[in-house]
Image 1 (cartoon, helix red, strand yellow):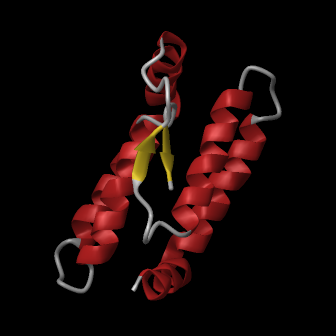
Image 2 (spheres, helix red, strand yellow; image 1 turned 180 degrees about the vertical axis):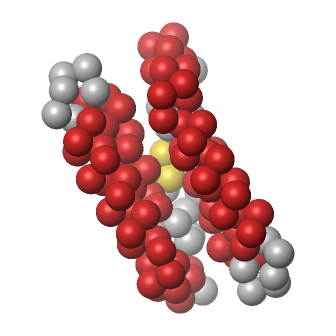
Image 3 (tube, one colour; image 1 turned 30 degrees about the vertical axis):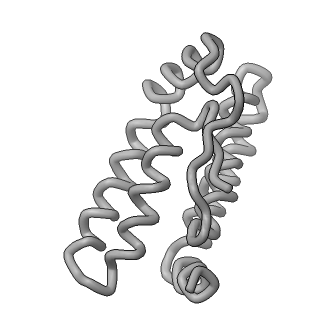
Length: 122
């Protein structure tokens, strides 16, 4: 089921979404200050390429003060826009029965898009 879901996901926008996150993350990595945020955007891009069959996992020391500060900076600069996009697409897809599995993936990506430091999709 997850293979079929990932293929449909890639065809109907997952590939472009993942590519956008990866290219944006690489652009952010051009500055030294942006490297941690760029790496999280690349991580989000890789996670959004094939979200079916994966779950959000907290890494050890996920609630460290540095990760908390980075998450706050991420939310203010990037995260809220990405989270709203995933929320809107998830709500639109949740209207139909066929779209429910894809809405679930958008809601899963919403969490990692809002707070990427200390969380991973495995």
